[in-house]
Amino acid sequence: MSMFCYQCQETLGNKGCTVNGVCGKKGDVANLQDLLLYSIKGLMIWRKDVPLEVRKKYHQECSQFDEFIVAKLFSTITNTNFSREYFEEAILATLYC
Ligand code: SF4
Image (tube, rainbow, N blue to C red; front, side, top):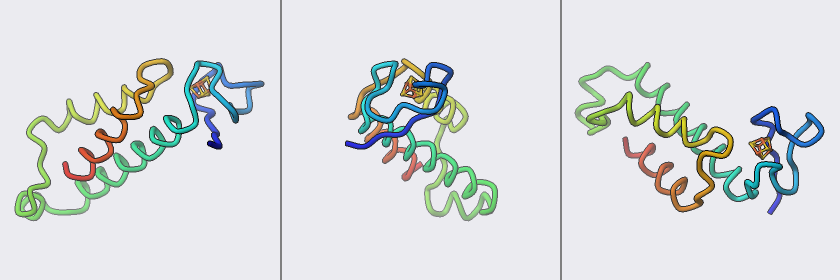
């Protein structure tokens, strides 16, 4: 699977990891982490632009939203989590938050 990650200072040649991560990350996890971050960005736009009443109507409120976002962001930093299953579930949780 193709890969491109330039998330951290360990990146290959200061340009980007393109085969496997110097940290051990694989391409599928790198792509899922990118997708999770894009999902979180979309969720934040939704929360910013849609009135609270509308979000509640469509059950778009997480009970502990701030903790949810921090945990998901933290999971993407270098060497924290390489579980494909975790990121698949995190993306779905973000889409339905
Ligand atoms: S997080 Fe891992 S794969 Fe990404 S740039 Fe750093 S060393 Fe490379």
